Length: 338
Ligand code: KG4
Ligand code: ZN
Image 1 (cartoon, helix red, strand yellow):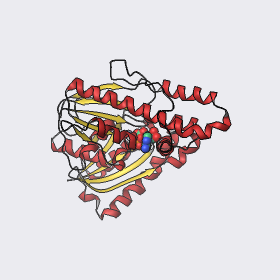
Image 2 (cartoon, protein in one colour; image 1 turned 45 degrees about the vertical axis):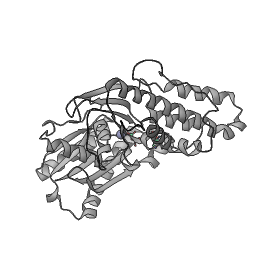
Image 3 (spheres, rainbow, N blue to C red; image 1 turned 90 degrees about the vertical axis):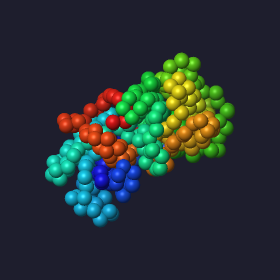
Image 4 (tube, rainbow, N blue to C red; image 1 turned 135 degrees about the horizontal axis):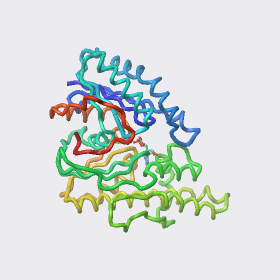
């Protein structure tokens, strides 16, 4: 069964064709980074317009690259939320039109569920119970799935998302956009122990996060450093910041696993590309009682293969998408991966 996946929840326009939930036939991602770079963040209206401009060419390219005709596509899957409403509307309208024209099922997919499913596209099958950490520019959430059908969000950020914190601190350090990869790069030359930045809500006892205090701490520190010294201290600041974020994320993820008894641990979202986060996760969950799955970097960032993959997985379990499929910028989490 071949599913066409469409993802437009933020600033990546993505189209993929996936066979049987795992075999990625094509996975195209048109990044809008250059468009948003001058603004230092995603401009929602510009993102919507770009999605509109790029979707049809990406679909045509997907069909051409795989040599498939539309008659070979069995279903259309699209991100229905959460995300930017204008961006979601472009993707869902496009998907509805295709499903109607081709007379095939349309499946609306929850973006965060797809990020978790991405861990299961490269070999391993979903196993429950599990705890997952989704860390991106828009989300920081710990999710517990007790079974295929049941689960929920255990904790999330109360202010900035982890990726957003990377982007904002990179901007304070006059690094490029998006900030995550820039912070990671410069951190390799820095001393992660030079600055003891706050670990937000580490001792709070719950599984929520807060990154705004950390960002403010970096800002105050920079204000105290003479301008001509900031350059040479940037690497130490970046490395200390990165370490603080990674420490909090994994501390809470470990706590979630201890509280729930879940031993399958999955990571997803753009920040899961971060090498320190990946290495530390492997160190913390190194005991054989854990099964840690982190998608390869290309499947961590927003992509449409994970959308098509999860849709297939649910179709196979005869859980078709809602008949009335509308975009929802605040789409709540209900149940399991379905
Ligand atoms: O999942 P994603 O591609 O898009 C959404 O936000 O949904 O995540 C993008 C975020 C950005 O904030 C970016 O700075 C961050 O992921 N990011 C990273 C790295 N690569 C991307 N953060 C830390 N280290 C990285 N290597
Ligand atoms: Zn995402």
